[in-house]
Each structure stands twice: as C-alpha cells, then as structure tokens.
Image (cartoon, rainbow, N blue to C red; front, side, top):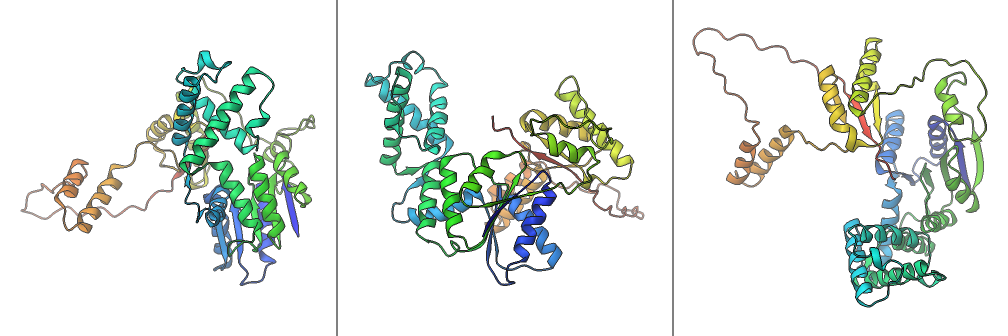
Length: 403
C-alpha cells in the first residue's frame, strides 16, 4: 500500500503521517524520512511525547537515507563523496585541460573568467542529476562544448574515485533494488521530501517497490513530487485544511500556489502585511510587532521569525532584539558564537588533557574569567539576589534561499 497525502495544511499532513504509524504493530520498525534530519526528529519527538515511549522509529533526512543505502554499494569501491569545493576544483582543472587541448569553441572567450568554473560545476551537477549523458549534447557549438566538458568531468570523477550527489542516489537505488540493508523492507514515511531530479525519482521508485507500506506527504501545489509519487504507484488523497476556513492564514495556504482567482472575502485580520525601507528598518518593525504580541500575552517561545536570506538579516535582527529587550535564540546560521560557550569547552578540554597549559591559556584569552569579589572582608556581605528563571526565547529560524 502506497499513499500520498496532499494538503495545504502542515497539521493535516502530520496527522496523516501520525495515523499511518499508529496503524503499525507496536514493535514494528519504520523509517521516517524528512526533508531535513531536524524535521524527522521533531516529528518522532512529538509522537514520543504524546505516547510516552516509542520503539523502532528510525529517522533520516532524504540525503542521509540515500547515503546509508549507497554505503552498502560503496564498500568494495572505496569511493569518496564529492563536495562543492571539490566539484569546483575539478571543473577548474577540466576547463584548463580543455583550453590547452583546443577543444573549446563557443566558451573559449569566457573560459578564463573567474566565475566560469563555478558555473560549469553547477551545470554539470544539474546535468548529472537529470541523467543527461555527454554524448547527447550535440547539435551546436555551445552544446558540443558542454558535452566535452561533461565527459572530462565524469572522467576526473572516475579517476579520483569520487561520487557526486547523482552517483550517490543511483547507487542507493541500486542497493534498495537488490534488497540490501536491514531496513529495505520496512514501512516508510516521507515528510514533504522535495524530489527535484531524475536521480532522486529513481531512488524513491526503488523504495516504493520494496517497502511493504509507504506514506508520503506533499504540500498542496507542489506538483512535481506529487506526480512522481503517483507515477511510482501511489494513490492520491487530498485533505482539507485543518484550520478554520474563515481565517486569513488558511485561505492564504489554500490559494497561494494556485492560478485560480481566490474568492472575495472579508479579511479576518490574523495575517498582516507590512513593508519597510531597508533591512535595518524591517528588523526594527519585526521586533516591534513581536513586542506587540508579547503585550497581548503571547510568550516569546511561542513566536518565531523565519529568514529566507539570513546573511542579510542575522546581525540586524540580533541588534534589534537586543535594543528591544527580546531574548532571541538563533536556530542556525548565526555567525558569532557565544564566547562563554567556547570558554566552557576550553575548560573541559583543559581537564581532559591533564590540565593542559595551552588549553588554559585559550580559556584566559576569551575574557570569560569570573570577576573576583573586591568587597572588603569586614562587615556582613549583602545577600545574593535570588536566581531568576530563564526567560523564554524567541526563535529565529533561517531558511536560506536556494536561488
């Protein structure tokens, strides 16, 4: 049985995944695959909090599951995984060799430009994920050049025994097809996993053929994963939004990715839009609205700020939260670690290395040494203030742009 649940509501999709796992026997092992490992962990953690205990739920990100499966095929080959820096280095080497051999015609005037090797690395990455062979790139000067460069990149990968993302997913599909691995026949839950390439499609298709039961959730309007899963044999099930139909948020979710004109309605006021002249002023306006909600009684730990371009907003939001007295926790992407944490790690390393002088000097250099009490020894000391409970934190989550 293979189902794909499509809904505009994340709550409805998570409820469908939770119901699917509850139908399994208590001791059954199952695989939970999220778009990120954190998403899978949060889902299983919520189930454990509701039940009190869980058993047999293994969590993976989509790429992590493919790596686990591919490792069964990579054991004898001893291939190393490719990195972005390595792919760009290979592309730069390939361009140099192709120019020296006189193979380039269309791209020869720009081959020596600084950004050409990076652009080539991205192009080769997409071509290999799509399963395009180098001999298919023929017809004009530009296609001929790309085909020659792709052939050289594939040759370098084979010579260096390196597997990129495309090879990883194809090896994983082969391993699952051969029924390799202790989990290849377990029920599987796919939580909003994006399927952007032919290599990922092959891997999901192999999982669907082997898994005794499989459930996938897809946001409404994300047609590519839905079509791929249906083509792999899934039955489609559309579910309504779990939120109030009269709310602005539910209507926004329902119509934001549709081409049809939404019906006219009176706004409920639970979604508000604003604009600001620049990132700095926008950060201030965000914190101002956070303080407005806190004044209405909403705790800080029930609020969150999602950032699409964290490199532009992190410092500005950190400064704005500090000015507004808002305790904020940055989920990921923060660039300035707390020196107190580094000092604590340096002290632990000092103890672990037998009171290493080098580690203790590192601890002193961070400026986190406690201040010595300089109060006079005579007379009673003022009573220490009562410890204050830690205040809840506003969560700032980074969602980097993929463009």
